[in-house]
Image (cartoon, rainbow, N blue to C red; front, side, top):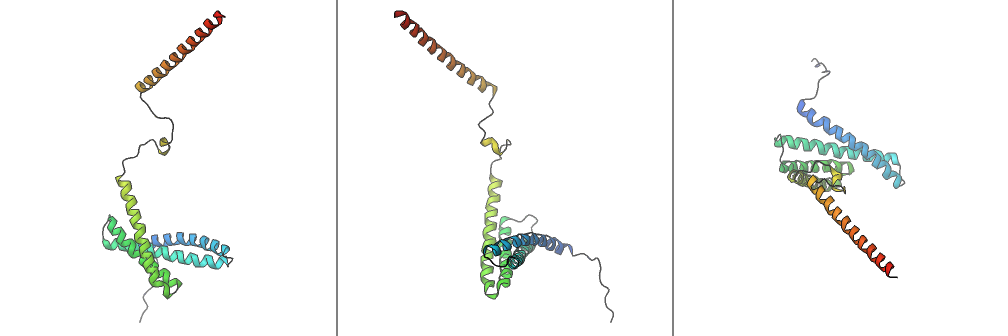
Length: 195
């Protein structure tokens, strides 16, 4: 029997690459966050920070990459190019269960079922909130283009006619004040001349 020559430079199938590579990137990002969180937890608990850091990094990597990969596979399995909110909810619930199962396996066999149930609920709850938020943003009236701070600005744009009206009202107030002051001056002069 001859050995088959080793395949060098062979790339992953496109379907697998579309799921595996991004999920490993997501897992690596969350794993790095887990390293820092684990080190902080180790320092706070006066335990070996390197051990806590390594364990948390592995757990976060496993949870994030398995969740993302299984969610992507679920969305591809549902077959829609533009998944509906219901499809996203299904995929996120199943992905949460897969991630919870793997996370439970890391912590011991007694944690598998509770992990699967809780992470399914977390996946469903998080996706339900994301769907609600996306629907709310889609149904919101278009925001004014002035920007965020325009609501807080005391300056409001007005038309030329409105500006003229405001100036006329102010001019009338000033003229009324001047007339009152002139009347008061006249009264004081008359009172002074009587003395």
